[in-house]
Length: 325
Image (cartoon, rainbow, N blue to C red; front, side, top):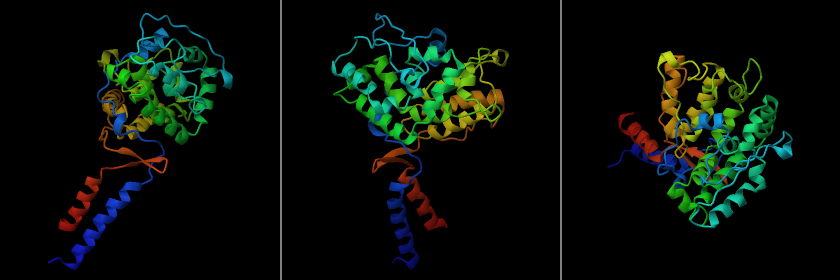
């Protein structure tokens, strides 16, 4: 026979099960379900530095000649993603058509997403040559609504890999499609990381890293959200190969830690290896290693996405309270 307190615990379990379906923690959009990236080709860890040094992008057709179009620094002439030929290596005409459509989307363009520029914009590399132009770009990008842009880019990521658009190319590992998908889902962590400022100078941490010619590893940090883990090196070759241990690095790794918990984010695979490199170089505790990656899912609730932990763990906790509390 149930005791009175047993009914209380049963009621508590039901209450937790209902309440966990709508816990508002962070704005964004759905990054679960069909947006998993476990089947995509592995990204080359050194891709970020290679692109920075050679000012080029990967296209769907290696035989297609890229056309580089320099851009200015006005708001109407800021760098654009995928601003060279998209190539011709597609199984369906619907895929390049979708690229053209989503790249001309005004909602996407207004975000000036750095995640879409870092690896796949030749005009962006011209911008990087000027500290003033790069700072101006970030002023514009960081003034965008992160919640609205996250929702926009997450929705486009889901549309991109649908069979009617570029689903087949995504499964086949088409570089443009795979890159675009990762760029779209990585928007939010890169937004927060690139908008950080060094409190001692009030400069953008990203600008300082991109213009630091003596240590290109500082720039490599901004490719971690794409799934590119920082490379480990022997102590003898740490100089110019390991990020500078400063406030910017600490805060950036803190941003990455939060998003590494989210299932579907490329940081799930790159955060911990990168944090170990940072800790080894900068000292234990500089980057948090006590992170269980990929344990939080994003769910859609009335157009606003929220994070929630697994319901099973909540129920287990309540049951433990009932029997051992």
